[in-house]
Image (tube, rainbow, N blue to C red; front, side, top):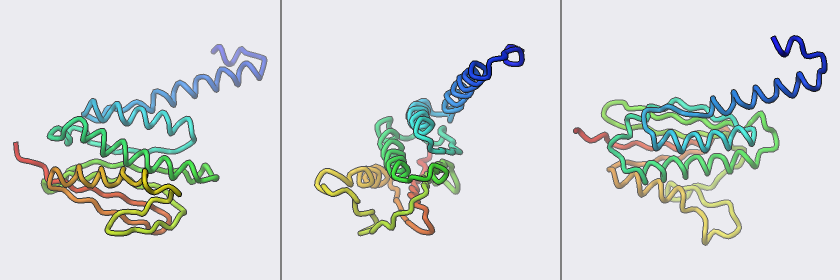
Length: 176
């Protein structure tokens, strides 16, 4: 009602812009069933909103209950940081896309992080070779994810096809 009565188009647009920003921040909050993952995802989601990256997620965080807090942070922090870094290099903001899924099937926890990637990455021994000039201090994120998955008896697979980078982690779910 207030907006309908506002005659100044600049003030009306400013109010609408403010409302849209508040809605985007609310939408960035996550309720996955795992409070640690919710914190990581909310932080990354807000960053994506600010940098015009579309982050979609279908996540059953309750399936992570057997994992250590630091391991959850390591896997999701590194995976999303890598995806975000790639998306920021894209000039066309319409192509900045990240998809995250977490689900269980046949006693396996599946974590998949996919992002649009126009670069052709070299994959050596199942791990992408860092694209940074100083490779001495880079490339540890994926190695950390791999070590964490292996700690739980899991594996990672990486592919880079048809302009999509795909990281898939499979971890056996322990019987409680």
